[in-house]
Length: 232
Image (cartoon, rainbow, N blue to C red):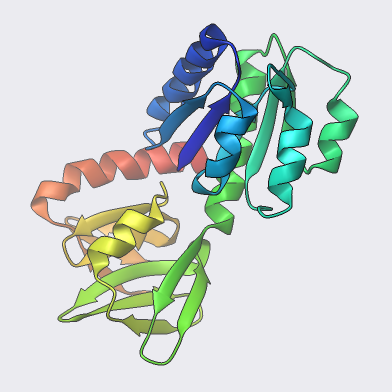
C-alpha cells in the first residue's frame, strides 16, 4: 500500500513517517511512504495513494479544502487528519475523513487508526482480471488463490474461477496485500482461506491443496503466524 504524509513542517513529517513505518514493520507488512510539504504538491498525485495523513492548516491553504477538491474525483482515498486544531473535526466529516487525530496522539490511538484502515483497505481492494471476453473487477477478499497454468493464470474465488492471460507476476505486484503470499512460482494464496498445513502442502478451506516450495516454507510460516496474530 502507498501512504502520503501532507504537512508543511519537516519535523512533523519526519516523525510521522518514522512512526508509520515502525507500525507496518511490526506487522510485517510492506508499504511505501511519501512526504508532501503542501496541499498543492499532493493534490495532483492523490490517486496514486491509498491513505493520506493530512494537516488541517497548511501554508498554502486549508487541508479540509484540499480534500474536498480531491473528493470531486477520488472517493477511494482514505484520509486521516493529523492536526493540532480541534475546530475542523465536524468539517472533516463532510469530506468523508476516516479519522480525525488530535495531537498529541497516543500509541494506542495511532495503532487503532492504522489497524482499522488496513482492515478496511484489505477487504475493499479490487483485483483486475482480464479474460478473453471481458475484464472483471474482483474483491481481493473473495480470491482464494491464483495459479499459473502454462500460458494462462487461473484466479479461483469463492464463487468460481477466471482464466486470464495476465501473468501471475503482475497479479502479485498489483495485489500488495498482507493477506496474500506467493508460496511457489505457480501459486499465490489468500491466507484467509488456509485450513491446515501438512509439511509443505497447504490445505485450503475449500479442500484444495496448494504447494509451498522449500525456499518459501519458513517465510510462509512466519507470515501466516503474523497474519493470524493481526487478524485475530
